[in-house]
Image 1 (cartoon, rainbow, N blue to C red):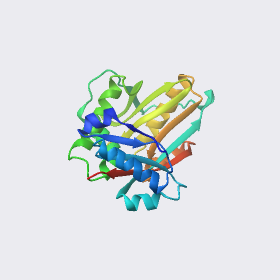
Image 2 (cartoon, rainbow, N blue to C red):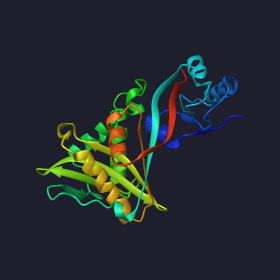
Image 3 (cartoon, rainbow, N blue to C red):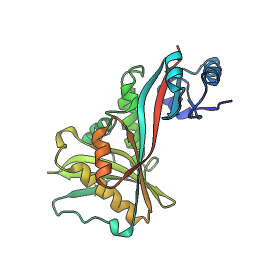
Length: 241
């Protein structure tokens, strides 16, 4: 029998019950039983991360009106002390933790979710996608969701930001974004360099980041810095109506 979990934070934020099915491959019959159980528990939205090789996912998606909203892609990079990068003099990097976010930082946070499943899926309430990414940044600045927030600047304007954390020798990148009017001038590369330096200085042996498969620019950026794909998952949304 399959298993699921009710997502307390997601449910509270969006204002309706949300659950996640944890089995990455199920038979249509077992999925149907879970679907009915969740419906009886007044769940409105089901998240289902499905293995790319699951042969039943297309059948399940069709039968239960699922929407493939993301190909969740995780990248990893092995780190060594020699990976520390020397910045060019003109690069302006600043650690910004425990400060109020500037307006441009909030704009960048929203732009970070350009390919997010919360934006791709049109059934979410209007305005909640933007609120979600602003909240992510604010909680990163307070230390709840990240250890540090690093920003880039050009002519005193914030051009990009990246949130980072480390635990047990593993470095994690959360939000990554460059302001729409500052793209194409290397700010994304500066952010990744700063994150890698942070991880090396904090004695991390591996760096990890999750992005959307549709975000080809981000995927190319990570590959440029030697990240490799470690996992891919098809992410479905099932709205119970």
